[in-house]
Length: 362
Image 1 (cartoon, helix red, strand yellow):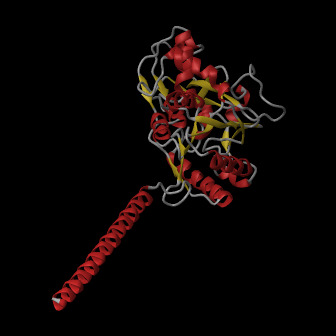
Image 2 (cartoon, rainbow, N blue to C red):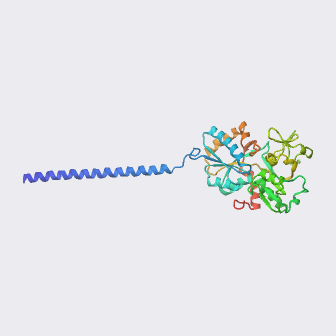
């Protein structure tokens, strides 16, 4: 019996030891499983995180409306891209969407990483649609507004807007402020309805449509000529003096001059294809002043990054490279930039409401 008691005692000690080992193993195993699960969750969260804005994996998108030749915009945009990257250490990507509407749609689709160079009325549409916010407006030779112009063949008998009724009309793009929307409002206010329309694809192309006889009149942006003395003022004759028209020619510096007057309106952008365009195409009239084009940011663009870019752009505008970029007259012709406020574009909001313009119908 003593032997049996001893055996039972030994068995109970072994079972107790085995039971303890089993409990410890279970606990350790559970702990390991929990740790593994946590690690997997952390890994999943990290993998889903957005790459930091301004890196190669998430570059800042710089959008330009296609108002002039895309090749000119892309090459000039790359100059700006390099300057901004050198100044900020951020990574940018330049693109030219297929239309004004496409530019606005891209800004609203990527509100936290886009900046766009868009005309005033396009800015209003973008602001109304998703809250795109203006930062700067263009300055061109001291003017922070610009105008639209009506162009006709120089030897035509068209003397006033009334004479345009029923005639064919070439314009750059239905989303263009100066090329279409403001002239449309002026025609509507005057009770004038044009005939056939030609969507030319850009301001120089619209001017060339009149030059080549593909349209009776065109509407494009107007920038005053550089005068030999003083500055042009609203109310002055918009075109080159008639006695200087025969002298108009492209200089070795690739600029369009008429005597001491330098042409800066859309006709100058067509000088390569038509060096005699001023001799063949005249300005019938110009419209009221329009707030200049904008640089605007997507509504969710990070404030700190935006401030960096704004500072870099102001510095870039003071460098010679600016003239190889957006300051080039074949690009957008911005000779500088100045801060802009949203309220400055309220007049264009009125046009949007009166004409009933939206992304759906431009």
